[in-house]
Image 1: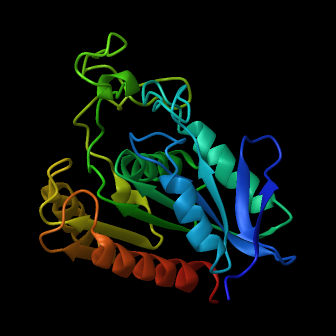
Image 2: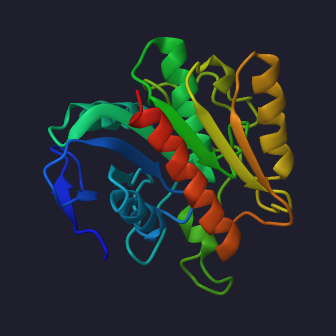
Length: 254
């Protein structure tokens, strides 16, 4: 029998938080989409999955603009807002007070970056962080209209030197190719990737693993041999089961 799920509002935030229909409270999750944009539905799919397993999961639409038909831009995005979202989730009456962060692709870069910056500057962080197919360095901006058909008059390009991120109103230290200092984060970290990824090279995740181990961290790393940027059904099912186990262990068990 499929468990009953509902959406509840997160005061001050757009969209709803997916969670079981019973009273709760539940451990919280904030989900970060990739360049597909917040309206593509992938983060909502994952939110429903986690809600069906006892979490309150909020798919944060952080890209600039966008609609159900067109991805928004990842340009001059302020991860400060993500910190505020984590704090709002933690304080929500339906949340147990423990919150995780999960990002895919550009959302993985976002999750690593906001966590590293928050630790550095004493801001709120998630209690556990998971990423799939992330970059280990800051990347340039992404413009959603660049993904339109080649002959579409609305198609546009962008300068890859444009900045994707700002922090506290500034872009210092956020130039493309700057390493993301996730080694600063002392908490549990999950990294998954495909060995044949042609979007972000698998070497990005391998470098992350080497840097984390050298810093004395103990990340949970899962490499899927022969898989690309997205995982096929079997590998995807395995990874979701591993993600669920990771968040259960670190957000519900004492």
